[in-house]
Length: 253
Image (cartoon, rainbow, N blue to C red; front, side):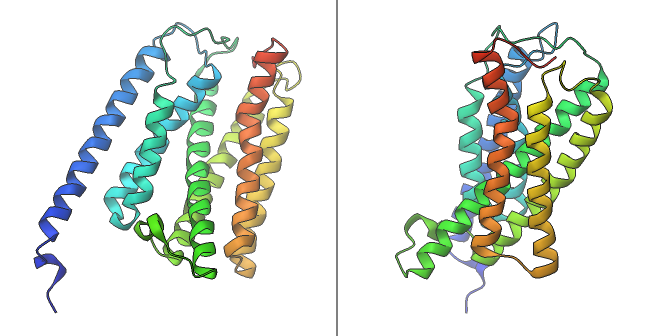
């Protein structure tokens, strides 16, 4: 048997991998420039809904790039995630009119950073969970895999899903804890609904991880719970913001 290191297609595959990583790194740098010009150059912390999505997209792209580098078999998933971050990066525009936060200090900045990373990790877990569900369904019905041939095995996808979910859960715990400490009045600052939805999502993720650890949950059960928690977290992050700013004319303070 010919070693994979000396396979005729090995140099070509390695070259494509290096080119893909270089392209992803370039995209991340350009995304960071857009964020710097559109968000962080403002005199006050002020994020619109699209800018919030773009801000979350950057750490998601960074994690996807690192994942593709460390685990080449996840390169196809990383490419999809990088494409998503490229789309949301275009939402970053300079000078958009977001509501400025009245309290601006390192505590609020830390809370925003933790929330951003938590959502990025949990979104990656959701993408992996969807891919896992699609692959499982094709295999169960013995249908041609098609483009799913490029994704990792069921075991690898399942392991990656729970790793991303576990990391996201840990960071989300820190984000919620910092919010309870640094937020003075949930009602006055219009954060009650966001906080409640985030806490419910946290409970769902805790149940999923406990079920995985204690009862060995996997497959459709784990996927359904994961996506349900992700949907609630999306409502917490974006739904409450859209309703407040676009419908009620208010904002988080």
